[in-house]
Image 1: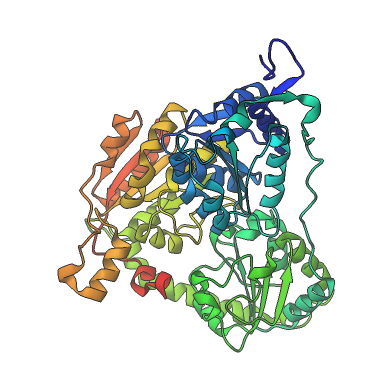
Image 2: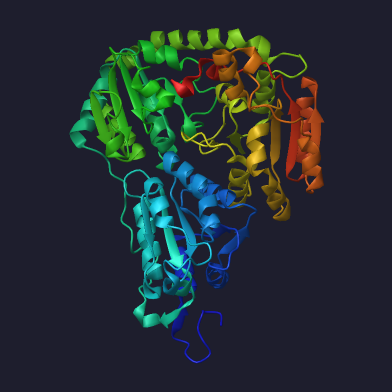
Length: 564
């Protein structure tokens, strides 16, 4: 029956239909899944609730796509997988969302309660495995609790900094039917409170005072600026107070390229010479040298959604916990009418940083314009940057090649940059493309893959073909896991640099063609731009296979910053 009822009693509803109703109440429009006998009643419920069921070829892809969907839309994503290997296959995607602070729900199947500890098909201790990498992990104990537990899991996704939740649902709980009157079915918009905390007012005033009187301030706008949709507040603050801004993670694109407050290449110089440094929504993890890259003489302020992150790994002068957008807006308002201290005399500091930017650019300009073959990775990412439009969502999936792109590619709008995040997970590219193109079909999606990264989840290129989701894909192909290769060469010498990191010369253009997409191969740097344009015009999922120089390494790779 359409509502999950039996022929004898229309007031009965199944666990799967209760789950679907709870997903609908949360605003979930699509679930990503790979089918299994434990979970099919959820599909039946989703059909009735008008929720799209997108089937992929690997559960890791389903989890990554749910993560990507949350990043693009600002609403939680959802993946549904079967028990045992279905759930373990999704672990990597959940772990990546955990480190990236991305709200998503993974629902996993489980054997029937009546077969508990009997060795049922695909029985594993899923909750025990998921607990360390989620904000909430639980078993649905009873059919009548199914919708209630889904809403509980979504609430936990937004406790502090966002993150993933996990629910396992035993097969008999999911398939059983209970009277509708016994089930709690939360109503949309009535079971979650606002999580937008504006921070401590006294701390807001203190930060405003610091920024008004700073002579050499700098601000790092991290992923939480986008997570909280605080772009407008961030832009208003840096322009009103005349502060040079650096962006990382999903914070990239907060300021458009060419904005006088947009800086990219002089971050290390700025953090070494600034007198006030504000770090917004980025922990002091390996990307920040655990805080050691900040001048010991600077006044350091940290703003974060998670109290536990503030002051972790490095002492700070001021910490503010709350919503980045609301806090930055409040700081600007608190500083209004007082911009007569250092803020009115910043031209010299901004010019100093712009000179550092120009020096860094001129140093790599020969590589950015190189006509060499094999193609220098800097030339490839420079061509990609020139190719992007205001509506291009850029996705980076790889090691060394994406490290190159992080220094050159500049998204032109907020929310138009996607990368794995601090877990450094390879294989997010195709799932992120799937999510981004489904959530925002009006946007062009451009994805750069390392050849090693693409190999991990590349078979779901077929899913993009099947669902008619065109995108422009580029494989920077050096037949190597080059980020690791460099470290081995430095540590063990050239005789052992190729152990365990060398791949075959795979023609990914032909792979794309085989699966029904568009593919081209590029050896000459002059052909990159035309090939990208043909891929765009094809209207198909595409892969441009660009053969890049295997002996060119990104500065970040050569510094091995990720291991320091």
